[in-house]
Length: 97
Image 1: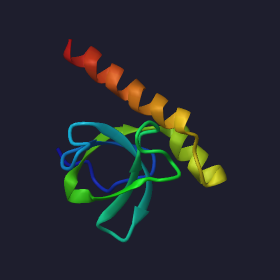
Image 2: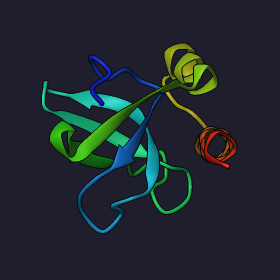
Image 3: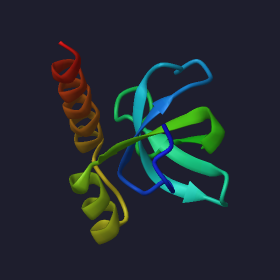
């Protein structure tokens, strides 16, 4: 399920690595093949994980709160990241159930 180019604030599913199967938010883009991701819990905004885009599955959801916060101030709170991931997961569970 390819959803175009990655954007800051976009929700991603982690496909590889120890966080595989989890969700995170793109908080930065490095070069063309890598994204910086954080979820606000294990991965804080101050220490994002650099991940190859091939190891991420882009979701259609883009958190406007996260995107606008990073655009305005250059950073985002870990609470907003946790909220964005939780909101996405809750919406996904409601779609399936």
